[in-house]
Length: 171
Image (cartoon, rainbow, N blue to C red):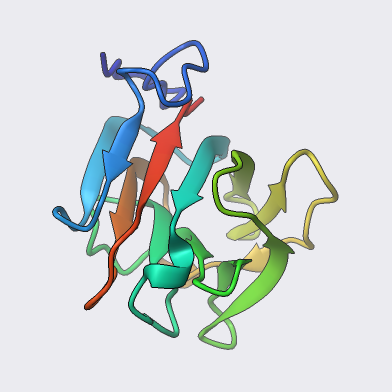
């Protein structure tokens, strides 16, 4: 049910844990869900629901769950990333200080909407959760070489742990 195009659509309606939701329980690692038309300016959103995060093995500093918007694939050096940490914090990657900065929190078994918006004029991105306040516009990883993004991917790592994560309704 993946649809390719400039708007990074995976599906058009929210099904949450229906048969179209992506579920990762640590049996898989990185999953690219979208390879689309390159966008120099855009917005990407996803719903995320974690389960049993207290049983996840610790994975820092990146966080156990990550959504990346990148150029060319998961291991691209240019990316805007949002991570979900075991402690219930949501963080964006700040390319200037080379670290993840917390900007929201989440609860197990509850859907959270996370949005990333980027622009080419100053090679920055901003982030928000659940239609709340946007962060400031901030440089993303390797912004100096940015031309556009064309991939959306997800990752779940739980070394020595269990639990999982759902991803749904990319638009």
